[in-house]
Amino acid sequence: MPVGADHGVGALVCRRLGGGRPARKFGRNRAIPKGSRPYDTKRFAPPVDREPSYRVIDALEEVAAETCSSARQAAIARLLGRATVASVVAGARNEARLREHLGTIGGGIVRGAGRRA
Picture 1 (cartoon, one colour):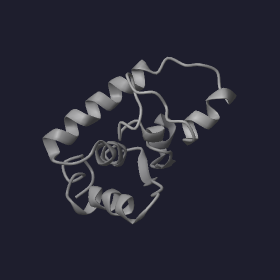
Picture 2: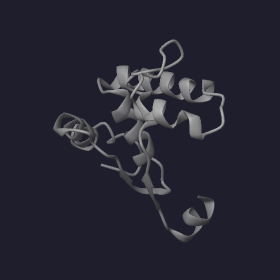
Picture 3: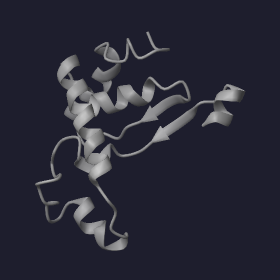
């Protein structure tokens, strides 16, 4: 990302938001539900230490509580607040989730994040 910053080029970030972790569908003390995407694909990837991602989610939840938002909204706002991120593609499973994502921008959550108004 430093090269992009040097040349005024931003990244288009496209990533699922923690595969259900920010919504606490599963986590440190909750098993991955059978039939879910993470459950079905875990056999294809080597085991990884998930604790760092859970610490990030804990921090997102703190921000969400302070801004009256959700952890998902805090994650999107964090990305949009980075100078090297031009835009974020966040998929929505349903209309409610789409409205939540759009509320990140329309609700003013990003407003204090730096370069966005």
